[in-house]
Length: 209
Image 1 (tube, rainbow, N blue to C red):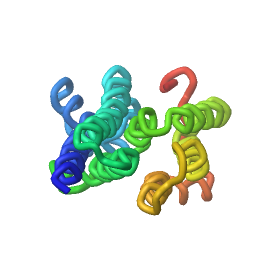
Image 2 (cartoon, helix red, strand yellow; image 1 turned 180 degrees about the vertical axis):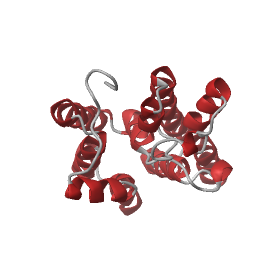
Image 3 (spheres, helix red, strand yellow; image 1 turned 135 degrees about the horizontal axis):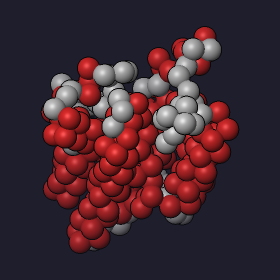
């Protein structure tokens, strides 16, 4: 139990670091929440005109997710847990939830796309590669980040359990499905705009990601 408490607490703290907010505040003296969609994620940072900070946000949000899972794996192996994958999956959930609901920003964070990819890279590498491929194909075809993110997240409900190691516990299976469903739920406004045909597209010339 102490191992679980430590790993999940650290996963939440790592996941809750609002890199988009911090980078824009530090380098542009602005609050990214007052710009565009008000989201602290990489897409909104890029759209604000800070492409370099946007890509840095993307990378750091991805890395914090991976770090949370790898740290949980280390603690699980050191404690000799029978099912390290279960703790790793729970740490992944905590990291993504923390990004979406960070304690430092009044529990109002990002949509969890980059962090979700980050947690799946060490957790289920083949699933991560698959959803990244889905995202890239859709984004390059449509230039709509939200649509690519939503469909990639939906595909994760399949790829996550499919590429997981061995038989899955109920907790692990629930975690692998919960993460993409949370990401999709956080895109509810984007889904509404997609249905209305008013969703924003990235311009190839000005805002290419």
